[in-house]
Image (cartoon, rainbow, N blue to C red; front, top):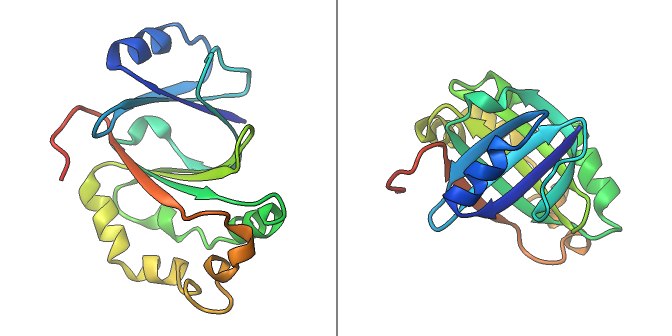
Length: 171
């Protein structure tokens, strides 16, 4: 499965979305830009943007109203360790109220993986962050067993971006 993201103005991305022939797409809005996500078995018609291979997938993109993209740069040497960590994830997030979808995305043209989670509403994401399941999913973080402590695999810090299905005032 292939996953593509491109950024731009709402008008540009709406036109692009209207010309997509295959797969599923989702147009979302951030603080100062918009993103069009396209998942397909075929090549996308995107002329620019970010290309990914889907390593893990669960849920339906169309149900997502709030997207959280955890952007994680990983060195070439660190890719096997990082991918193994995500192949062993417990899958607890899928059982959370308001969960819509998850995609673990391997970059094709860069070093930045994306862990995309989609939620029915931002409140469900916040509830997930405060849940015991979240604590369990991240229990090794900050310990000697945690992948976050393997500094040689991360060339720079990760960062999070968020998007809404509709233009809204973000908190």
